[in-house]
Image 1 (cartoon, rainbow, N blue to C red):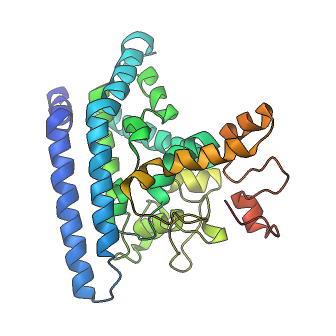
Image 2 (spheres, rainbow, N blue to C red):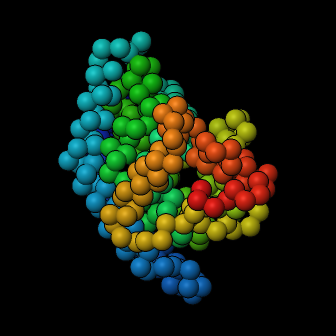
Image 3 (cartoon, rainbow, N blue to C red):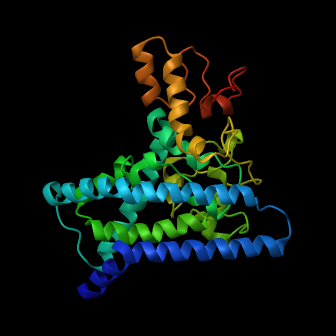
Length: 306
């Protein structure tokens, strides 16, 4: 049985895993594009999809050249020198690794939305006003292939080896691609358990009730457990509260860092500059909050510039 799980790790890690993800991603996009054509609703934005694919390619190249090496080096160094025990190569071991990785994703995703520094790395992903599978990989090279996801580095402490991490991440990432679609309306009881397309559309919504909700990648149980779940009541509008008015690749890639630099420059005191790194996006040193909580509360005159 150990040989079976070892074979699974070998299949899904390294070049094999990358090839499987790439082929699956392309196949899913083609199927979705065909589905939109058959639906005939005109909800597929060809230009935005092309921009997303080019931007994703730039990010993938950056990750291949730099980001992945940094993430791999840190992860394996922690596992080799600091792990508390070894996660067994068994079915139960892989289930535990999957749950731990999915929980770490939830924590990192929530951190990315609730701290200025990490939101700066995450803004490009939310900058598209569309919702389809090409949006799933829209990101920035400055994310360094997950290096700016601190909860992931708890997993090697708990004995999850890098090949095991890649294997369970493969499953999570495939589901994370699938849930960026508008074609799948509801999935019945699965909507109560998984981060289905209906649940993840909420996460990309800019309506007040949808802001900072549904962080899970595979399971929606973490959101239910920690109070961040919101059911899709009507299809959201997508993007950012203050939309990115450009589809240039450079602007997408640097949009988060540009936003953060603007926040830092606006603060006259160093204490406030540091707070912009740690406080939720929309926190203001001038007493005019534009956070998701303030928006939901209808804070007057504080919506511009968030």
